[in-house]
Length: 149
Image 1 (cartoon, rainbow, N blue to C red):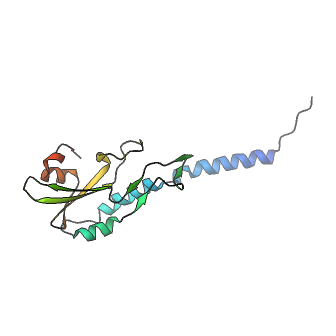
Image 2 (image 1 turned 30 degrees about the vertical axis):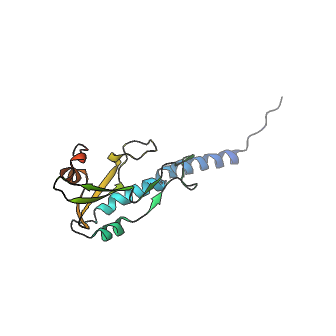
Image 3 (image 1 turned 135 degrees about the vertical axis):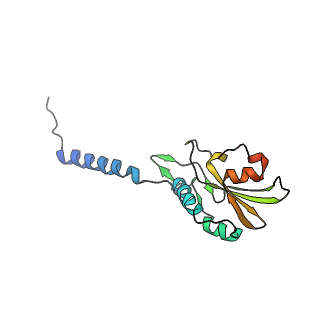
């Protein structure tokens, strides 16, 4: 019985490819994560009193996920996000109407769902940015007071 000699060049090439791919893995950012990080960064560019159109322009109308190009580590990213994720018109305790745009900014669990605690609300009154976050929204609209973010 004869043993077949292994090609040392092929083994080196396979090892090189494995190290190269493993080394690049932390550099891979899926489109959903990129949008989430961009949204967090853009929040810092907003200021109270700015017109809604300006705030929306800063935040953008991007969408991510759910497409064939969103393959991450061998699986399809089924989660789809967009800017804003949702919009609500609510009445505050003071009787004023508030327009609320919710943006995806946080990740609590990798479960292919976007939950309220992963969103940051932008609160507008009379067409101007009145406040950002659940603390502000909860102070104006009682149904959001228990969100606690």
